Length: 72
Length: 172
Image (tube, rainbow over all chains, first blue to last red; front, top):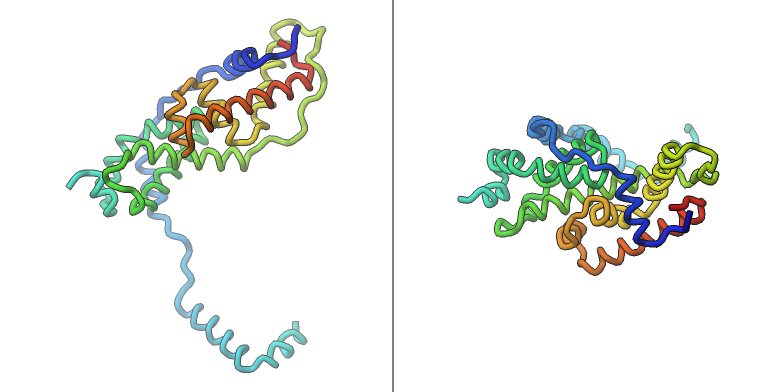
């Protein structure tokens, strides 16, 4: 038995990977449509309002960060 | 208005027609790369979803099949990168005392294992060129590179594989 040369590598690869069936089993359109219909989870508007309010309060009263940190 | 223009404007009926027309080609290309029908189906759906999301980037005069194939190839590459086998290789030499068919089976397994450990870009180029014998022009187009670059990747893949197999003591 010899060490592989490049040509043998190519042949060995072909032998190691038998032909694969490339025919598609069925129609993928329903699956594509389902995926298109799936919307990413949206953050409701009132959550954005709450986040904005909290950020504003902390911006104008930065000392509150220490109070919160103390209670955590 | 032609189909591709209607698709690029977001008409879902036009997209459905394109899906039915090209899903087989996209699947066939992806399954050649990942060699698993289930994963290839999932990646084909993912590809078609990406195609629809990126429809405004498509120029209606362009080659839809080539564009779709390139998106599919990128997703298949990502899949191979995410699912690389463990680094450890079987290190025991191919058993000299085993019957021929077992020896061949073991050799085949080691070749496949070494092949899957190649960097994804080399693996894809070598699979399409050497195993699937696809034209270099098509591979280059799908990988978004030149024919020369594909040949170089195939050459590098073969060299790395040869080194690994010789290191493992797998002989022809």
